[in-house]
Amino acid sequence: MTALIQKPWIWAWIGAVSMWLIITIVTDIGAGAEVMSAAASFGTFFVIVAIGQMFVITLGPGNVDLSIPACMTLSATLAMKFMNGDPSLLLPGLLISLGVGLVIGTLNFLLILFLRIPPIIATLSASFLYQSTAIWSNRGLRVKPPELLGDFAVAKVFGVPFLTLAALVLTVAMAFLLHRTRFGLSVLSIGQNQKAAKLAGVRVERVRFVTYVMCAVLAAICGFFLAGFSGGAALNMGEQYLLMSIAVVVIGGTSVAGGFANLTGLWGASLFMFLLVSMLNTFGLSAGFRLIFTGAIIVAVIVISGRKT
Amino acid sequence: MQRFLTPNALRTLLPVLSLAALLGAIFYLQPRTMSYFGLNLLLNLAVPIALATIAQMFILCVNDLDLSLGAFISLTACITATWLFDTPFLGILALLACIAAYGVMGALIHLRNLPSIVVTLGMSFVWTGIAVLILPTPGGSAPDWIRTLMTLKPAFVPFPIIASVVIALVVHIGLMRSATGAVLRGAGGNPKSVERAGWSLLRVKVTMFSLAGLFGVLSGMALVGLTTSADANIALRYTLLSIAGGILGGGEFVGGRVSPIGAVIGAITLALAGSFLSFLRLNPDWQIGAQGAILILVLALRLLISARENRS
Image 1 (cartoon, rainbow over the protein chains, first blue to last red):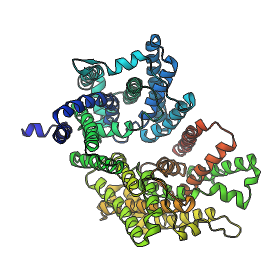
Image 2: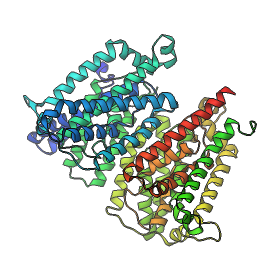
Image 3: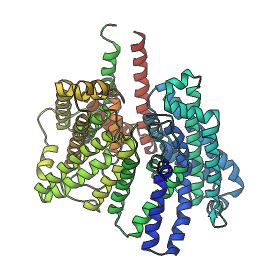
């Protein structure tokens, strides 16, 4: 039991389960099952961006990617505009989306490397450019996704959303990448002590480059499928993902100081964040109170789960 | 010549030169702005932005970043336009409570060793939530005295310029020229040595966050004085503007290296950048992008200066 309590991911799961219990008690078991299914769908998108953000944050203090929302928007906008509802262009569309991720990740890294500014500022400044490109390319109109993509994004296998299953596979692969490969261990070692890692022969800049590109590519993919899921690319579609990606990582038990990552917690935290908002909705609170509680609970969880480093 | 243009002097001059270049370009594009009335109009919104930038500078000074400032200023604007207008006593109490809340946020970040960006991002929801409760739909009115102050028309020099100079000088003297100011900045530069010298880091953090709260409140009040009404999202873009202004003005992200005068100049530069872009007839789609580009450009210039610094 004590061993379980000490797991870094436990708080996120306790939070998620208690939110779900409260919703089920306040409403009924049917609504509880429904909200669980919705949580799996929406939580999947949180997890996809949070995996990338987790790798970035694990690199150590100051490493955060603030361009995720802009990257999602730009990737979705360009891909949807290219496909223009034509299902035969689905694969090239996905490739465009991946390309956007590759370019954004590379640009982010080049700014960090050459301007020698903290990643927070580099990704923030660059995100203005990405956002502007998205606005310019589509003047803020919503482009519908091909029907096939929409169907795929909401498809279910034995009642579980297909995307959720795919994201679970992705999570397992990422856990392998993090704990069993040279790259993952390099990320962890840089986060624990960059100097020591460098002296031990870790190619710090190369690892950072791959990490930032991976984060942007995951955000781009997430944007692509989110556009399919929610009926199109919109300019503000990435808005809530800035806070979500960071909060999910931190609440999930990954160390904000870097060097320790936890993938199990990402799922718990993603479900928790979605269920928290659903719970506040169930109580029928006004928008103002919902915002206050969301913010206060996020801060409270971070304060409670924050370990002294 | 070589002796005067030291890297340090260049670093200080960079914000001034950027502002001068921008003003020159605006005067060239639109000569009519070169008048009392024109400048007043151009610089109108510079005062709240300058106050917001100073607030962000206090946070940057202790190696933190505040992503909730825009939401906070929106909240204080809402309080100013409602409670401070209807029942001044209650309004003042509420604004003081806002400042105290900022101090508590600083204490929390320090005591639990939390990342400021996560805490402030979370708190931005709280500020917006309270603002929505106070003022669900845009409205309210500016208290007369604030309105009078913000629309002063002093002889010869437009009010925004006088206000900016006063803000810059007051903060400069307090933070850069006083003994307490040196300790406060030292806590950003080398926290350990400040602590060993017997100062409480907790008190430093709380002081800096409270100061940020104070200037956030002033920014909200100044904004309402100009717009005469408020809404819950009125100042959301101030978060980014304040960070950008602080950086343009020569602030560094670590090490307590900040400059109040530079921050005010940076804020004015950003306030003018918007007008400049519209005078250029730039596609409005690129307005946000242009701000990002300006930011990257200034950071690149500064890197060139540091490279010279390292060589000498």
